[in-house]
Length: 351
Image (cartoon, rainbow, N blue to C red; front, side, top):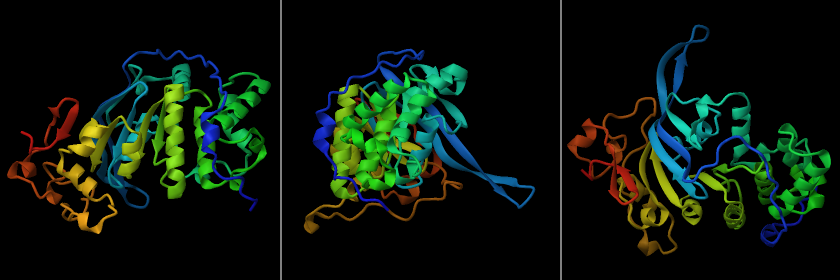
């Protein structure tokens, strides 16, 4: 392996003279919500048999999820592994087709995009994935990785694209001369900066961040999150952050949604959710956050294990693990209700 290039440089990320290049688009710019999700469902069939496969059931990965994200804001979605967070992200990116419900981008249903409209949509929503080493082609130099979207979408001449690559590297705190290096010659945090530069290359309106720092050392996580926040303010970006780390989401999000077994059980402004959580599952997640003082450790209010998503429990999906459950919780799925201003939850405790 080659040598690792110099360590992270956060100052470079905030003191560059980057000038945004205007990229044309036919997707209409509107005030208000840039992304709207309405009653979204995604079921994955489970088949049995070697040759003549027979569908024996479905994994209900996303179940009746609704939310919206305003332009320039950040929605964080948290929950345990397997709760449907990444599936929701894939649906928003158009990588999966919804079983039911709809996703609107600037007021238009993404499932209706075809041809040039779909091509433009791809330019306006990008992704930064969990593992930067796996998401970057190890056989290509950084200049090819960052510049590939520009070549695919034919944005500018070759010289203009080369200049754009340099600007992008400076924007994320890397040096232009590092464009001739390969991914293995960078540290983990620097590789994630390259992935962010690639996501920014087409000047998207929204970026989906799926566990963007979970594969990085703790000492680097704050640097990358601070970089993302600085870029959002500078470029007026809209983020959807998927994470199991409540501290990461609290640090960066305007609103936070909590998912459990495919359901969005609580949605609230970030500060209020952390100070006044409503749903028992949200409270349990907050109780699980490590604290420095052992005397302040509280016993977890969770019981049992996460049910099999192929055979979810009847009624409220959380009721088998909830200490506050009532008889109605076993019988009926709760409706989403606005308990406080802009604070929604799905729980029979708030009838």
